[in-house]
Structures are given as C-alpha cells and as structure tokens.
Length: 437
Image 1 (spheres, rainbow, N blue to C red):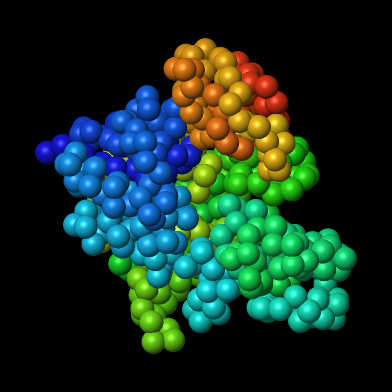
Image 2: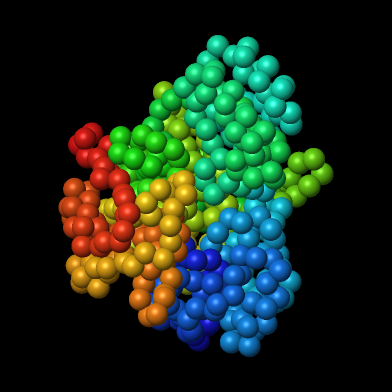
C-alpha cells in the first residue's frame, strides 16, 4: 500500500531525501514543509516554515488532512526543539530522535558527558560557564585547543585554534560578543586539539540495532586547501577510501555501540534512547578514531552522496527505523551502487559571512541533462517562476563516476554549466583522496 510522507526542512539534505523516497514503489504523495525550488520538482511544497515550533500545529493539521502517515525531520533545529515528540504525539510515525536524545547534537557539553560516561575515545576537555575562567584555563595549557559553543550554531560554532591568542579571541567571540547567538555561547567546551584526518560516519539506529552507512569525507573550510572559516560543508565524497572496512568495524565497536547503549540505559537518572540517524564526526589518529562531535540527523552534504549511491528502498529503511525494527536490514542487507559519488556545494558570494539573495540561477536544465548527475537544491526559491538564490549554500551538485576521479570530473562539469552572480565553490573536493591514490 502506498503511503504519504511529509519531509520537514528546506535544504539540500531534504531534497536528496525526497528524491530518493520518490523512487520507492510504496511512496504516495510526498510533501515538503517549507521546501525549496528543487523540492517543488519532486514533491508538493507546503508553504509553512515547519522548522518553527509555533507553526507545528498548522503543519500537523495539513499533514493529517493530506493523509500523511510518515514524518521525516531533516534539520537539527526542529529536532532539538522537540519536533519528533510533537508529531509522534499527534499519531504520526516519525523518523528522527526525541528532544532528549537530540541533545547529543544540541549540546556539546551533553555529548561530551555521554562520551565520558560511555568511555568513548575523545579529546581531553573542560566545560566553562564564564569567559574569565576559560581564559585562565587556556593560558595554562601548553598545547593548541579547540573552542566550541555549547549550543547549535549552524555548523559554525567550532573554532580550531593554532595558538593561545586565537583561543582567547574565540572565547571572546563566542561568550562575550555572542557571534553565534546568546543561547549557543552561554557555555563552551575547551578541548585539546587532536590532529589527524577527519572522517564522517553515519549509522541508522533503532533500539539497540546499529546499521553503519558508507563513510564520507566532508570539506568544512570555505576555500581551497582547507583555508578560511568553517562552513556547514562545501562538498564531500563517498565512500571515503580511508574508511576501510576494518576502520568502520572499529568505529562501530568503540563509538556507536557504547554511545547507543549508554543512551538507552541512561545516566544521571535519565534515559534517552536514540532512534534515527546518528552521525559521528571522527578524527583518525595513530591511537585510533576519536570523536570530535555527534550530530542527530543526516549530514548535509553527506546525505547527498550517500543517498545518490543507495539502492535499498529508502522508504522501507526510514519506516523500519520509525517502527524501531531494523532487523530485516542487518547482516549487510543494504545495497549501494559500487561507483563513488562526489558532491560540490555552490554558495552565495560572501558565505559563510553576509551574502545577498534573490540572484537568478541559470544553467540548471543543462546540468540536469548530464548523465549520473543530480543537482540538489538548498538555498533556492521561486520568484516569478524563475529559480533564484535564497541562502548561503545554494546548490549541492552531485555525480556518480566509475572511479573517484570520474565522479569529480562529472560533478565539476555540471558546476561549470550553472551560473549566478557571486557564485563560489571549492575546486578541490576529493583531491585529498585522489592524491593518496
């Protein structure tokens, strides 16, 4: 029987989820709230900002009227605000963790406490509520540190510091100037900087069942050569060659299993079982993988490359997680295209700083005609029936190739067909892996 689905969000991740769900023979009508110009091609946009808790009641009434039975929540903000709990309370099946479980991303302090409780390998750290105490601590360290805002900051609340002066400035930016908002910077984590190579690992989690997805490598800094400020992600590729089967098994055993079991058992007299996608940002060191952070949802742009390769029915998967029963997919029953995928994010001029919107985007139809290419929309909207920019990260241009070099070449071939004033993107996505080959 076909089922109707609501996807909450308006980014490239949500467009990728909708695109893959639409391929399921069981998918009925797919709605997206609020959606973007791209989701309008593959779903029915509901022009209500479903990321705003004040509007959830309107969204739920619309979903009920349209016969929606499964709600898929994309972004971290609504999850952190209790969106999954709200829709479950209204009788919908929901893919996404509870507000309590979503604290693993919404609070860096909470995540670190879980890691310590579950004996998950991570960097040495301290938590501070006052800038003066943080400054004193930093001045006594004889090693570089990372300063993290406790709360959500759109992926930009982490400052990797090369020296003490940078760390002191980071404390000022986060706690005094409140650059990431008064709530996010109320507390900070100061941790020892660990060096190595970063890897993104995601796993579907339902109860105690953990289903790892292929590892990816994201590119956070805004400019080529990993220069410039951090962003929400400038591009990625999958599978990451450094994520060997042995490493995936080690990460599952040392990171995912203890974390998921600790959340299910609880601590401090609380239980908060995780149900959804658990994303571990790892640093690969000589001593093994170390957790940098957790996210409580599909990564963006990690979702784009993972879903581009996924052959298993995504609707079956998400519904199984919502039902807390993934047993049918254990023992390697997930199927992926053997070809690698590369995603290049095209951004508005000025991003991750200030940027203009409303810029006309040209070349989308030409790019869409390329074989094994999908242009996922992020910060786009329709104005007078034409697609214009509406955010910092505008498009996630994703391609498959027979090998990583071919996937990269195809993605950039599509990127070069697309234009809008001020557009910028990194030109070195996947180069790190290609150099190693």
